[in-house]
Image 1 (tube, rainbow, N blue to C red):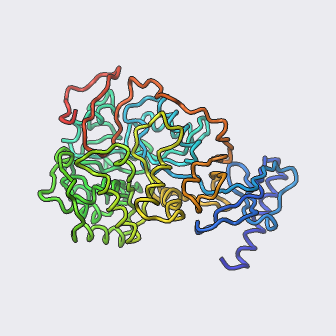
Image 2 (cartoon, rainbow, N blue to C red):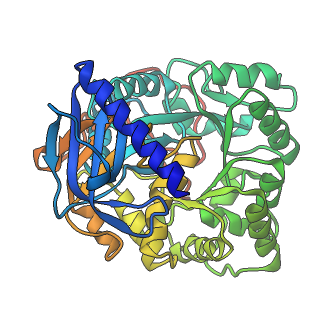
Image 3 (cartoon, rainbow, N blue to C red):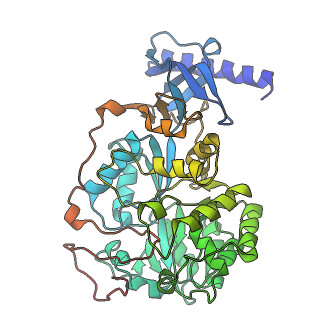
Length: 462
């Protein structure tokens, strides 16, 4: 940034701080911190961050930022400040259990996560959680969620029943069965009316429908988040359709599978244990790069829940190849909460990006902040005018990525959350009603008892 422009912004920032102080609005100055720079590659020591009304109004070296009279001061000498983390793949409400969702969100926030992207669930709960988080009525990251589209044959899956209890499967506005006869303008409008940020394309959709849905969603200003293969739509066809984010690195590997699975159920029975990189898969990756698609890789899930026929090495290799080609990768967990762990599973995912995928510490941090925010059309940056969402660490994560676990303080919307005040849940609230999330791995999904009506269609996956 040219020096004159930088000086101009510092002057304006200081002016705004003085106006805020004069108006009696509380102002907080975090002083003495090492704050990560704009490129995310180094820390600038001796920095000050001034926040007012949930936003950063000034940030810079302490000598360049004037602390207004009466401001509350929080010394952060010896601490490191990074933007709030983004978990780009969660499932909060496959089966709507409010207490469990709030406990999960609380753990995310105290782990440094200030934004999550929910990838399919019961919007009746998600919308309320989103409102509560936005208003800071609960300790939780900000929430962005999708409405799910899939082919009619998918809706024998019991998870789709759980996410729309009380409504015939496939007919809820947030969980719609789509066929060639569907009025896509109406279907997308119904999805948008739920408050969703995006359409999630899940399974059992042919390529022409994927293309048509994507075009209509974009016309109505919605993003499109997709599995990297939708069966029978291939990864190459998902890329050509123009979606915004593709989830699950291992799904890209299906491009080279012959015969190609014609449904999600067939894909789950496919053995990838002998999979190898082919020119067809390399072509998919090249097109993803040229189109600027984001890969939500979900690498750690294969280690967390290993399955012999879908080895974790497939996701690792494909994420590594994507990274080598410069494809932006976000960090998401796709996890069912492990209540024995007091930390977000996102931290393990970030560590996988370094130790298995080959990212530098700075690149992995960028994946969990800047790129993650892009998946929902937002920004994660420490700059004047942006939300005061940041994490204060006790050690430098650019030296050791595991230092992201050394959380001292999380600031979200300018509100301070001391990690020392966190009391982690040791078991899932109302766990007897907990179901499996809309995770992508093969295996057996057993619907657990729920008080509401269960539809008669039985899943072949159970």
